[in-house]
Image (cartoon, rainbow, N blue to C red):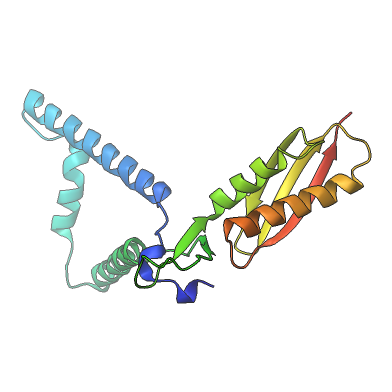
Length: 188
């Protein structure tokens, strides 16, 4: 499905968690460096924990197998982190079918995010009689709708919700329309 989409329609994931971890590590390092600098200014010497690392490094034999192993491991970790930052993530959007517009030349393409598909499905359900609340989740191949209703007999409601969501997704231009699954929770 995503193989025929141009690269510009393939958004990268936000990578918020790795950015947060990196930010916290850099913040902690900055706090330690500021604290060590203030200690150096007030006492006239660097704190012992701060100089212990440089003293230990000065005593190392840089041509030993342990140093080479540590260097190779750190290089591999750095390359993995660099590749994680540069390689784009998985494609998380559904393609839309566009009717050709006479005034536009060239090839036009559009996508809808999975989150937008889920919101559209949930909003469609809330306009169906008998539905109190609705929520939905979407993947590339399936939309799952969870409906809460005060009705006790829910057989017809399940068909109405499934048909309503399917027709709304077809009308929005999703191509292909994902499978729709509905779970109904009757009220008390």
